Image (cartoon, rainbow, N blue to C red; front, side, top):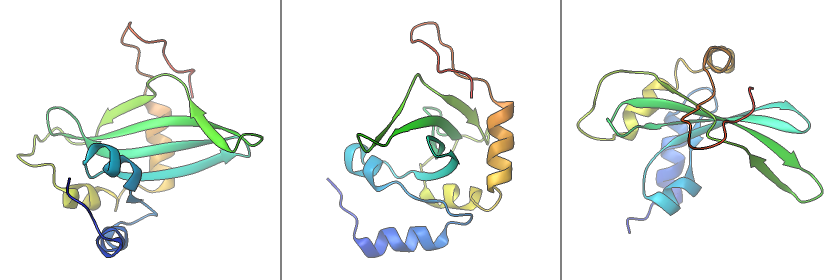
Amino acid sequence: MQMMTKQQVQEINNKCKNNWEFDTTYYIYHQEKTLIKRIIIDDESYLQFKLNYNSKNQIQLRISKFYTQKHIGTATSEGLGKSKVLEETSYKRKDINNLIIKTQNLTNDELLKINTETKVIDNGIFIPSPVF
């Protein structure tokens, strides 16, 4: 398993714009470099945005709505959320630098606009997320 130092994570975070950051938890469990951002909606919920590559090596944005449970101290999400391919290009490698470049244009306003325009995933197998 390839490990990353705190300095390497900080270097990635410093390159990201608009408060995007390296998702260390996802990297620990899946050994895949992704970026993450959260936008708080209210005291009980937030939207989580994740930049990663799909199975075709295209850059995609995954959106989930989390509900906080203050008495437990955790947050939960239902269903598969939303997914939008941001770039149709199929890359040869899943390079974190391509994701970092995308953060320049993914401001809070742009992310909220994308969220509004993107439908919840309904693949017929899993119960779809509530509309958010």
